[in-house]
Amino acid sequence: MSIEIQNINKFFGDFVALENINLSVPTGQLTALLGPSGGGKSTLLRVIAGLENADSGTVTIEGIDATGLPAQKRNVGFVFQHYAAFKHMTVAKNIAFGLEIRKLPKKQIAAKVDELLHLVHLTQWADRLPAQLSGGQRQRMALARALAIEPSVLLLDEPFGALDAKVRKELRDWLRRLHDEVHVTTVFVTHDQQEALEVADSIVVINEGRIEQIGAPDDLYDAPANEFVLSFLGPVTRLGGKLIRPHDIEILRYGQAATATGKITRWTRVGFEIRLEVNSSDPRHTDPIQVVVTRAEANALGVHEGDTVWLRPKVGGTSVSAT
Amino acid sequence: MASSSIRSGPKGPVTYVARVVVIAYLVLLVAWPVSVVVQRTFAPADGAPGGLGAFLERLQDPSVVYAFQLTATAAFWAVLLNTVFGVGVSLLLVRYSFPGRRLLSVLVDLPMSVSPVVVGLALVLAYGGNAGWFGPALQSIGVQIIFSTPGIILATAFVSLPLVIREIIPVLQEIGTEQENAARSLGASGRQTFWRVTLPAIKWALIYGVVLSLARALGEFGAVKIVSQGAAFNGETATLLVQNRYGNYEESTAYASAFVLVLIAVAALVVVSILRPKEGPKEGPKEGPKEGTAQ
Image (tube, rainbow over all chains, first blue to last red; front, side, top):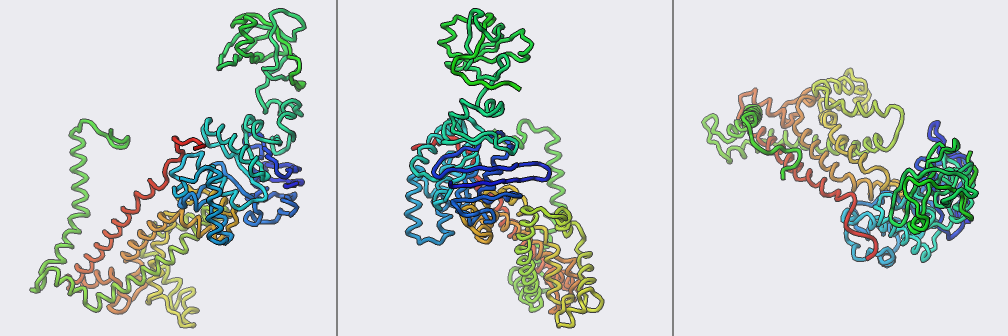
């Protein structure tokens, strides 16, 4: 195990930021800490990095007790949401920073910086200042800077949170490929379930300072431990006594073995997807039932806004009992 | 297109009246009096010829040279003290929270609002050789503060204390702690982080603050007047010299010294205005819109 976290507690005044956190991060994996803002995931990452001290508990990195070690002695690479670029240094100087601190020979530093510039596709930007780079480029520079010190673990705090959707998607794929190349144990914080599901080998869902569930992306999606995990990993609606994903609901034209029935009151087309709201008179459904079907399915069924339809869970879908 | 802060379009009579008022106000209050000093500096006086030669000759008077040397010494040490102390206090005020932080923040501003004469008086009471709190003790080990150069330095440092701090603090707040945290995570010690990351980030604000302090220190009069003997070759700084000579029927020397002080102030303003615009473009765009990820 690369990172071993035991009984970590952290308070900010009365606010419980982290409550009795126990977590093992396996070597060489890409782990996502997923949860809503203010849930404690960034605090946990900063505790691992030594940028924040826990009130109790221990952090072990590669077998060494790091609990009392200051950040600069932990050999941890940290990537910040807003890049934290050294604005007065060129891209190459930024990347070389950790190596110059370690007083490596100049030749060795230059070689390493070249290698990393190549890895993050910034070779022709080496002599630019961070202000002359785009957000995506700055973040790749920050990543190269963190990788330069050959960290035991690489920690990324909402690394793509400040970028626009397209760049975000590209960087996400690129990070996955990079990780497959470099194999450094990586933990990244995100509130974007899509990002976690796409990139991570393993996801830790954190909410209100507690770990809700740990597992592979598919496990979490298919077998959520509770309502929170289910609802956080994607849209959820209520059908009968169950919580279910809108795309796991089957639409029927007749009342065979249906769980609920109602009129389609809303029809939103987003590309190939059609999002419906079905208003049921059943007192269990105080809110409209959300259903997602593909355009082809809707055409095949011949349903339109205002039609009365019957609903039931699809075979093989996921649901949990509503509380 | 005009920028949003500047109104363009038809100019009514109000605009012209406002302009005339502003210009008249500045001329009457600043430009005209200063120009009279300049004119007198180069005017023939007491039957002696005027011009540049006479002006330079007056400046070579040993007591004038002494006064400017003393002013330079006091300003140098005061600015040095304020730079080191100012950076330290700014870091303390911005980066750490501790009980009494707000009080300290207010205290730092005090020298700006309190009259320099009061500052001088306070220093005499605290460090005076006969009755001061620390004075007798310091005098017994042979250190005289009041009525000697250290007193002048202290008084000058006191009045220019907030200038460096007030320049650095907003910049420190703006850059935040992320760059410093990044440096630490990359293995830099506190000292290395300060020299390699924090100091370069506040460099321009610091230089700006130093120039302002220097201008203030060179022109200080009230506080120095109280803590200094103020006699020729004995604690007479440039500003004291201007007053002494002016009251002593040696106006031409007073004008010449005053003119030099004006020149230094103008030079400081020029340096500041050259430094000021550099802060904007240095930041660059927050988000570069054009570039994607892969090349």
